[in-house]
Length: 115
Length: 116
Image 1 (cartoon, chains in turn green, orange):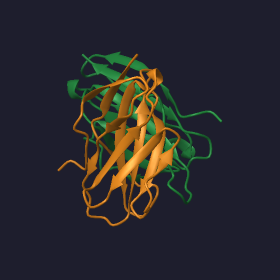
Image 2: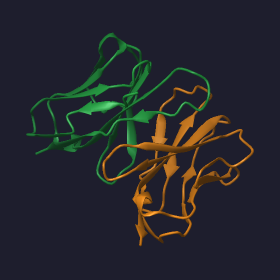
Image 3: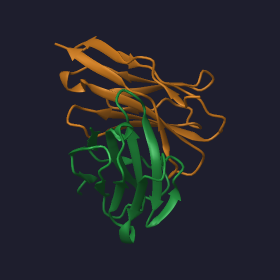
Image 4: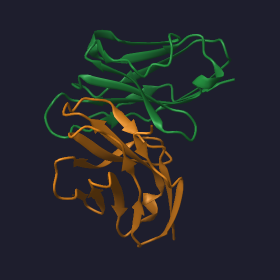
């Protein structure tokens, strides 16, 4: 079974540009999450999809961030326009909808650097 | 207030010795879950161990055990017989509420270095 994949692994952009991050969850996982870690700080929740619907977007920092999940499969996170403080590692995670402790499976992250 | 606190930014341990990574949490929910993840230098986050708030026994998974002290709100990870491959960043996380799809709160992590 393939794990959570994220693309690109690294992105370096100028302030004001647009960047789109992609996440492919594990097949069959209805839950998809985005998190972000700014250097040295804790990993912070951004939002949660259940299939194609946004279940919780309380962690989205501002309206420069737009997340979508087409057809309940892969998800994209677009930052437009990017600011310096958006630099960090963006993680995607997925999980099933089932009983039990239901851990989240994480991708390797996308390291975003805004210059 | 921080939901998860990891007070050790970095730790060293001698190979084959045991090490404890600290984690304290803050929640008013009665139902919650506690998780530990390992992040090697390659970047992926690997799930290690889970403890439910109603579990009376400490969770164990191989060389990993979770020292769960509910009254103190602590969930320390104990790694026994450390190996060089244990060198990594370790994150403690909490999921509040009874729904098992709720978001995670993470700490800032502890970087563990295992010395040969």
